[in-house]
Image (cartoon, rainbow, N blue to C red; front, side, top):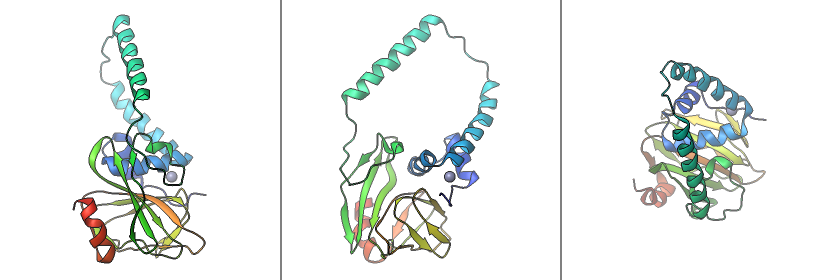
Length: 214
Ligand SMILES: [Zn+2]
């Protein structure tokens, strides 16, 4: 049961490709597990497609098409030869939307909190991370300049705005001073991305900020 979804504005930006690479990955993870948002995206893409249809299609010869297909096949083979970026075994099955992303090992950043850096092939500088927080613990305190997107993969957490379980996506702007708490029933694993610069504060901040290069 999914209770928290990306806003229509976010889905529209996802459909149009204008969302930054980091948030795009997190929203893609949500869409991969949420039929309602997948349908919404399809609607937005169809609307966008109407505009594309107005552009005169380029005549393409059969020969050109064959060559195009051959190129795709070769690329496909190449992709299988290289196994892609390194992915550490972090103990959970990662969503398909993360295929092609690098995943680092869990690193300890404080009592009950571990994080893993996710690298996005489209953007080396994307701020994407997996967070694993033990039952009853708080998420690291931080502020940021843009929107923050957090998709719950396992467990649940809550703050003043509500409870977020597996499949839920939390969108928080810089007005939200939040430090969600993980439910007592078990650890919580989520994937988070930030737009703009992040500034972590306090104990976690001093530990993690050098790793983010901020
Ligand atoms: Zn949704």
